[in-house]
Length: 207
Length: 207
DNA sequence: ATGAATGTGAGTATCCTGTTTATATTCTCG
DNA sequence: CGAGAATATAAACAGGATACTCACATTCAT
Image (cartoon, rainbow over all chains, first blue to last red):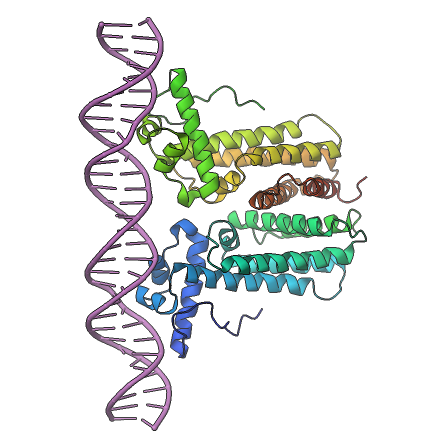
């Protein structure tokens, strides 16, 4: 719930020093996320982003050396957010049902603003130039958290990693699909997703 | 397993009459699917498709009035295929485990050739101009088959539709994710997906 | 062999892209 | 206040890619 303190900034042409410019940068990233989610990578142009941010194209290039640096910033912000959701859900030991609920609630929250951003970032947007490492590291930590959760409620140590993979992609699939049809906040869907998680992790038998 | 007989063809400029031209059209659609899956909608250009098909760009426009008609043909072919997989898996009554296995096997098969085509078709490629109806109808029948299967193994009639939705998108998520990392034919993943389906449908307790 | 079916690919016109730059405005701080 | 730094502007550019046409060549069926 807090993306308060700004990162040292990925690769910026100039560090924003005044409050005004910080707001500008924030607006650009936010608008970028919006455009990316709404139009996809194919419709993601720097001019469009600048316009959506209510900022001139020049300002954009004052802080981001090129288009990819901008995507990188967007990616970073979004992934940090998602990561914190899973981390918090899988943090302390708690009943399985509670974990499932918190996870679903958090994931839905993280996707409510820019419904398809996550998928676009994963599938469409190019992941080149050094972002490859960051991307892999994100994926690793992502799975790690899932695996932690799975291991916590499971006796058999065997398939933990595969289960984490299956679980995470299943959850993503449901969320993504719901997002596409604007059903993210349908309560019965949330309920069913929670049940899916519970039942799968516990390997059957649920209250 | 049979997409033998050709459809009357969506909207074609000219009907292929000789064997030669039928092969050409087929090659174009096939190459289109390949390009779409490999480069995504952003990289899907008519010139690229023609080249990949080993056919001149002129030939492409001899049969497809425009780019969208081509996507439409690709979409139609792929969705028919997927639909038949689910239909056959949910056809006669059979043990839950068998249903799950056949479903997974079929879905993986349908995605092995063009791993990300399905997702690209759903998410990236524009679905305008009258294709909206066909698309909706596909989705409806798609869910219907899932619902049939769910209802078959479930007592409670209540959440059948929601469950079908959750199940289908979960399965799609796992398949899509596996396809992205070339893990479609990892046996332990298949096994886990089968288990996920079984456990979710049966609402716990599985052999 | 003749007309229809099919195939060719250079060419066109258009649109858009990312990016620069010269200039204008606003802030900070002595 | 005022000077220099930080920030913002938008017109313009150079280049590339795109969807699609057309005049012509080839291959088929009869």
